[in-house]
Picture (cartoon, rainbow, N blue to C red):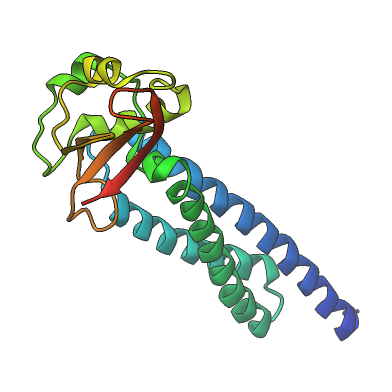
Length: 205
């Protein structure tokens, strides 16, 4: 004896809700963790291509997972496929947004421990890979420059190579953000010409 149509519909809806909840949680977690793990494991991190491929893959996987979870009839399969794709894509995009707006977006560049010697000897060319970029997140998280004056900052980071202003120094950190077509620089702002650091930021030039 088959269950009434209403009961089957309610069961399919419950399965769909559970599937969407799982898809959203799993894709958001992967969207946050995968770029950081890749950044830890590799030197070159193609940020934008990685994000696009990740969002598309997780969106599709979310659609399949939700469709299978809700599948009782052909229409519930198609509904699950559509809603799952939307949920997976939205969760992955939201996770990417968290990374892009945290610590000036530097977490998406990868993370490595700060090494003053590596920083100072890194290529000052504004094109291509530069190990300085992966040190930005660590520098901000640890407050490495907090309380330092201009002389101390320059001793630590070397001579500024991306510009000098009356109360600001800048260092090239390579191509990291956006379409990776324009160089990024670390900007350190001082209270006055030779006083303590008041702000640290990254900017695309």
